[in-house]
Length: 272
Image 1 (cartoon, helix red, strand yellow):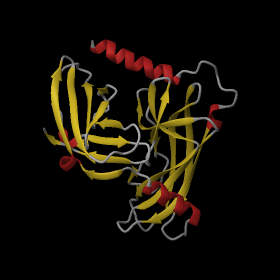
Image 2: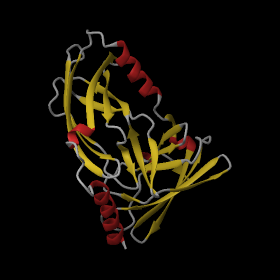
Image 3: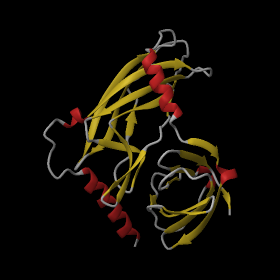
Image 4: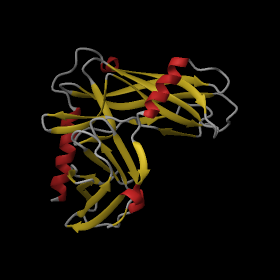
């Protein structure tokens, strides 16, 4: 059963990424990335962003791509004076592609990145690459490089600052998971069934619940959810590579509820 599940999941990903026919243009023309300078924060980090522009009609994935697709991967290996990077994902859109739900962005969007330098008083050279999937009628993988200088003393363009602040404001609201989410974990033949009860207001339209467990090796089934008054109930099956029940760390759970007009994110849950 588990082998079938994993093969089916892998097949869905490959089907999403293999084009039926090659696009007329070079795939690198489908997506462009520019570095936006921002400002130095009170803690000494530098708030910057990537402006990602897709060709008309094309879309790309959020950090969790949905029922099919591959999450984007970023490398910062060419950077100077870089200690760490934290990505602040704005609220994505849920797309329905013939009954298959994917999560991502289309057109142009700004992806804030908080950069933690080794020396807060020195400029940061941000040089990296992105490996992403882009989709229209077909999906193709695209690798794109980007680069720019971030300076604590040079004023950023006002428009860039506004774009970064707007993207930060569009992130899902964050609330306490243990205060908001109760979860129960039940063993199944090849893993666990996770059921959560979330005490959050309706986020508008059809709500999509996304589970992230801190374990990228887990296969997570499409989430089933429904409203019980002001409580949103969601469940999914979690299957590890060893195909058996495992110890689940509730503190690592991240739950995101995506609605038509709003979104909310919680970390951790308490036992039911």
